[in-house]
Image 1 (cartoon, one colour):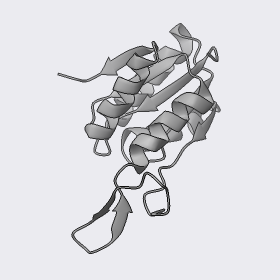
Image 2 (cartoon, rainbow, N blue to C red):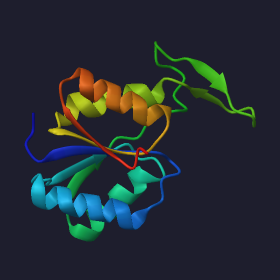
Image 3 (cartoon, helix red, strand yellow):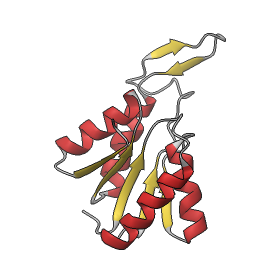
Length: 135
């Protein structure tokens, strides 16, 4: 585990910038957050990346490789526009973030299946998970 390293995740449609800034400012002060890892998506990930830049906090982005259909475990699906994608790319990215970043925990803003997957993986790894705005 890397002290001060936290994964920040959440929904692609989570756009509450003030809330993300409030929570990450508090995490920096109370949890010693010094390095933010996120998955490169829109919404909560993008806001965490923006906060990181605004506050001069180090971090890393782990984008999912949705269009790489060559992965041996790829589950190929088709979008409404006919574009093919690997449906497991997000889950694979989530596992990679956990393994490579070795975070202290996860700050999870309200989200969908990808966020739920990240929470499940973090809990299975015995990490602290802080859920934000999960009414």
